[in-house]
Image 1 (cartoon, rainbow, N blue to C red):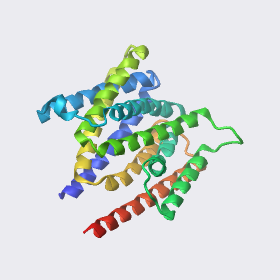
Image 2: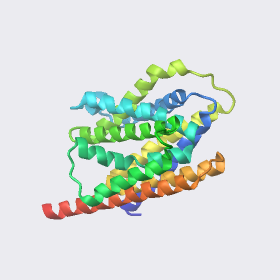
Image 3: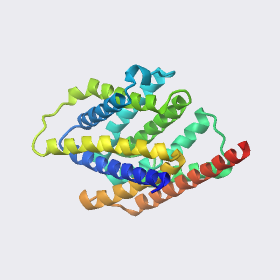
Image 4: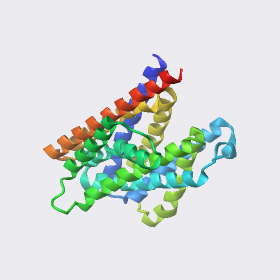
Amino acid sequence: MSSKTQGYVFALLAITIFSLQDAISKHLAQDYPPVFIAMIRYWAYGLFVSAVVWRKRLGWGALTQSKRPVLQIIRSALLALQVILAITCFSLIGLAHAQAIFAGTPLVVALLSILFLKEKVDLSRWLAIIAGLVGVMVILRPHGDFLDFKMLLAVAGTVMFAVYAILTRFVSRQDTSETTFIFTGFIGAVTLTLIGPFYWTDIHGMGYFWLAVVCCTSISSHYFLIRAYSLLDASAVQPLSYMGLVYASLIGTTLFNENLDWPILLGASIVVGAGLLYLMREHAASKRRIVESV
């Protein structure tokens, strides 16, 4: 098996496990607060980070020499809070509906890149961004001047993750991926440990089992994603993330009896199509830049 094929296998494993993690988190949210679930997940992630540091045998100091420590802390804390919001959305509006809105994240990232990173895009990419935002509006189905507050939570989660992605791009210009990875796990665990105990809930029955499973998915999904990124470019991994929407639709309809009406299907199709178009254009532009630099 070639390294590229292995990369795709790791990426699909990561996306599949992330989807299972979301489904288990939604199930747990019926009995436990989202903050509590997110805290347990991040404790597992934090242990994984500690194991990685120990295995590297370089010590925490050598791996956390960030040139942008404030931004690293902000982006890591932002992701932890976004996880809470995502679990809340899974519980309130369903896996499929929430993931259909979250699918617009790459397009929001593209828009923020234009505004804050001053990246230049051509007309076709602008059209892809606009089409994607239209797709999200089809999913939201606003009536007059009113938008469902629960839907706005999903939009807020999309924007938060997009800001996190932009900050990650920014710090990656000066910090190593290992440093960024460690900050993500450690600061996220600390952030949720500061607020999670206020939402502590006694664990009962099968709760122990499902919390243990969600911890295992948290560790394994991040491990496979790291392996995927070590073998593939981000542009190759990103299109596969839309499989998460397919998984969410299947799990939502079969296990949680969610209803996929035509606005969700139409809007999600527009968002995914626009996202894939944008990624294809980005990949083509990247190849042109490589050829021109030779």
